[in-house]
Image 1: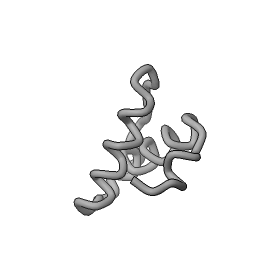
Image 2 (image 1 turned 180 degrees about the horizontal axis):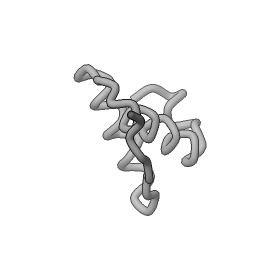
Image 3 (image 1 turned 120 degrees about the horizontal axis):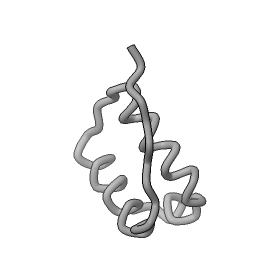
Length: 53
């Protein structure tokens, strides 16, 4: 986890994850671990998304 990631507000973290999910973008193992680390800091945040056609 980078220090920058920990500085991002919760809504930015959710937007990043929502964009990845909505667009079906792949993640490598390093990004996966970063996303999981960000999610641990936001246990009450819910990410809502719709996939784009």
